[in-house]
Length: 187
Ligand SMILES: C[S@@+](CC[C@H](N)C(=O)[O-])C[C@H]1O[C@@H](n2cnc3c(N)ncnc32)[C@H](O)[C@@H]1O
Image (cartoon, rainbow, N blue to C red):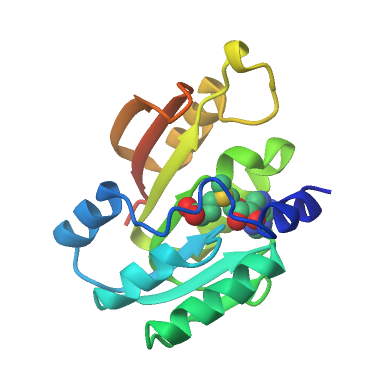
C-alpha cells in the first residue's frame, strides 16, 4: 500500500523532491574521504548523483519504481554510472556492501513496525566504522499521525546499536520536529 502511495506521489512532483542536496550532506562529503555509499530511499537520485560527483561509488535503493526510473534518467543526464535498485530498504535483496556511508533522507521514519528490520540490515551492510547519516521527522501529537515519524524511544534504540556522533534538531517546512543525526558503526 505504501509503495503504491509513494509511486502515486512520484506521478507528479513529490513535495520533498527538491532536486537539491542538503548542506548536511555536503558537510559530510567535505569532512570524509570518498568510499562506497548507499542511499536508502533514494527517490529520484539527487543525492546519489551528488555523492558520485564527489568521488563516491554509490548505490541507490527505493521501492518506488517510478522514482528509480527518474533516477536512471537523471544519472544518465549527469553522465553518472549509477547502481540503482527497486527494492525494499528492510530487505535490500542482493546488496551486501560493505558501505562506508548509508544515507537516509526521509525513509527510515516511514517504516512504522519495520524499523527493527531496517536496523538489522543496516548493521549487516555497513562497514566497520561506517556512517549512517539520517534525516527524520520525529513523532508529534500535534501532527496527528502517530505512525509516521520517529519516536524518541526508536531514536534511543538506533543510538544503542550505533554510536551517535552528532545530532541537530530543527523544524521542517511545516513546523514538525525533525532531526539530522550522524551515527557510526563500531570498528
Ligand atoms: C520522503 S521520500 C525521500 C526521497 C529522497 N531520499 C529525497 O530526499 O528526495 C522517502 C522515500 O523513501 C522511499 N521508501 C519508503 N519506504 C520504503 C521502503 N520500505 N523501501 C524502499 N524505499 C522506501 C519512498 O518511495 C520515497 O522515495
